[in-house]
Length: 487
Image (cartoon, rainbow, N blue to C red; front, side, top):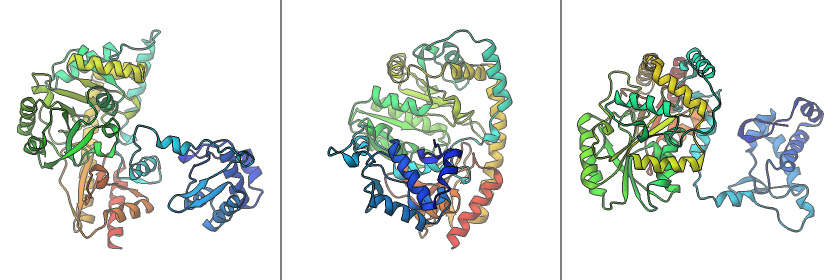
């Protein structure tokens, strides 16, 4: 049977040969019936758009319309205004009086909020290799250290002994390697104060359900990557965006808004996502003093901290923390590879114990093999060697993107040069519709992230990533944006 994009089933070669003997609209009818019959599209499901089906089957839209009309006449589908084409019956419920389970209703009853529709579209589009990826927050596969990873996995395999679930806080060898790595940043923590997680996003989820009450306030930069998620909101928290300047989040504005002790500050000092802003050392000290005075816990997200391009950033806020005010998040997903699924939280031991218990309830620990591989990367010196190579290549990509922006969008936008990370925050002229540019760019094979997914208000910005697309695609994609604006 059938896998393809969007969870749609694709017929096997045998089935294709059988189906393709029929008229094309019949092929589509048989395909849709198969999807319904096998429960891939249960009652209440929305079909792919006519455009998507036409593209999938290599036909024009009128052929798709003919097929859908016949299926509607058979009582299986119905077109609903604003919703598209919906499955209303399947081949056996047509003969039943009791209505079937509507999974769409069940999906809507879940406690965790769905992603924004634009975010869902972007998530799907980021797996489309035909698109120029100016959005993707992931290192290019060209920068994946394949030979070194093979060597690490072979070494780990040769040393492998029978293993099961790891310690609730994670593999001890990895936590000790992380502690040594953090010491180089001035963060002095013991392995017992470190929790291994499956990326920093899981850390945020554990914090949201394990440390914060419902109706708590999460202060964060405005804009912020966290606004594009539903992690805190689904746990009953309220997000309160705080304005930024060239140094990052503004402490005085936090102080003015901070009315209750039932709150926490999430911040992203190094190469902020999405703006690329780097927080200065003085601002970091100001934030820590505010947090200590106001009894405001800080979640410091430092997943891009190793990806400096011009000079190392100031020491993390956590390195100056003497009262356990700061939870420090790190990860190998941005700097090495997201497929390892290795990140960490460093903080007071009681907090780490609590989060470790919740992680055990969630997934009983991250992959043992990934943890052993990560420990080898951090303890052997391979990670630092890899970072040197990544920084060199990212700097070339950043400079190429900046040059292309100046050449093609200099008359239409403004931006700041990022000193590290992945992103350039591009602010378009006010007379240019960002939503139109996003949609038209996608239709012309270029994916960008519109600023509105990172804030509660409309923003005249988009996030451009220089980390993923080849240099020639970066230049080509930016040139296409220019042509779309001029048209």
